[in-house]
Amino acid sequence: MPWSTGTVGTSAGLPGGIEAQVDPAWQPWLDLLDVALEESSSRAWDSVVTVRAERPDDAPMLHGAVLRIDGQRAKRLVRRLSDVAGVRGGNDVDPSAAIRAAISRDDRALAEMAERCDASIDAFAIVAQVAAMPLLMAAALTLEPSAASAWQRGYCPVCGAWPSLAEVRGIERERRLRCGCCSTDWPLPLLHCAFCDELDHGKLGSLQPEGDEQLRRVETCETCHGYLKAMTTYTALSIRTLVLLDLTTIPLDLVAQDRRYARPARPGWAPAIEVAS
Image 1: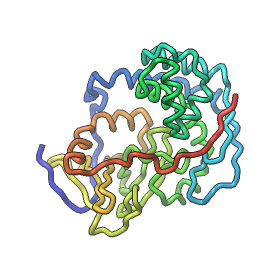
Image 2 (image 1 turned 180 degrees about the vertical axis):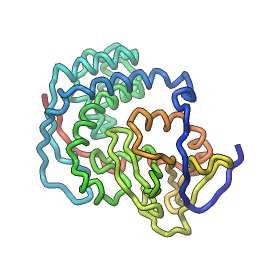
Image 3 (image 1 turned 90 degrees about the vertical axis):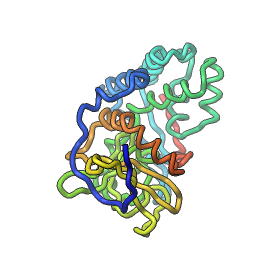
Image 4 (image 1 turned 30 degrees about the horizontal axis):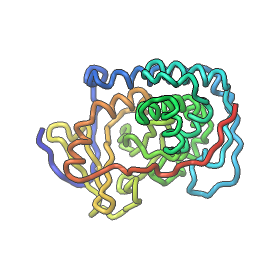
């Protein structure tokens, strides 16, 4: 597909047939996601108690938080996800520790737990990250809309993750960043790099697939050489659709990476939290 380089603009439309476009190789990941989303629909996660210490203004909501979960329910979730992922020793993992490590992006703790399970770090990390989703989504629901609207940083105001995608939404073509970990939705002006806060329009551009430029593009920054995929939407995407779009647009990632753009290796903010049952 031919590509053109341009300045950042907006587009119109919504890609269709998303499910049919997913590579079958990603089905195991979608199976895990569906387990997490089924679990997140339970009101059991709504009873999360969040105790927050004072935190810096630029820290996400969960930094310094103590999250209380139903230990038995979390254990069943980790066991089920481990079975789906083929992680044999997942039944012996402390679910609170796994979820804490996933939210805090504690790679060392995840690696140690994976070793105890005799599992690959990648497989175990995915199980832990997906197991954290019901808790993260419940926490995100406690964020005041006014707080999300006032947030002017590129990382998630709830969990500190970088956005999975940017939505160019509705008639107003408002740019909304979306977190693929907790589903949080927050605005950031069009001419504003999510990763390094660059505001110079001369350094912000886009890669646009010809014939499809009104539907999707890759936003780029010449200062940090970061990139972010942007999709036109009419309304906010569900988190499942968000994940599906991320998977079905991997060719956009490949084009960006071929042109030496990259996503940050570390999260915008790794929140220090405690998870107790």
